[in-house]
Length: 119
Image (cartoon, rainbow, N blue to C red):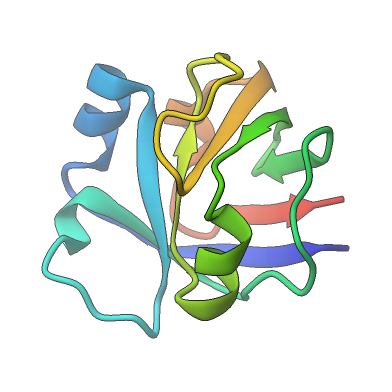
């Protein structure tokens, strides 16, 4: 397992941001931010680099990584931060974007207590 985590807090503005932009920022719960209302906090950092083609499960939804920004793995290892983009586009929107495609609705799976796993 490359990443085994649990969502600990979903900011009050996350669902609106997700509906408007199909993306949301993730950060570890031990990393303070002024943007907590706009991000998802989690516990459990990745143990290996993510790769295109990996499967990520969030709650009961499953997605495939179809694109990775140039800095994703570095940011995850050093800061624990990334942006998950659910637009199904393959070209990374930002250097720290994880581009996802799959079955499921991020609005229903991104919630406190949901497990995140990457295989």
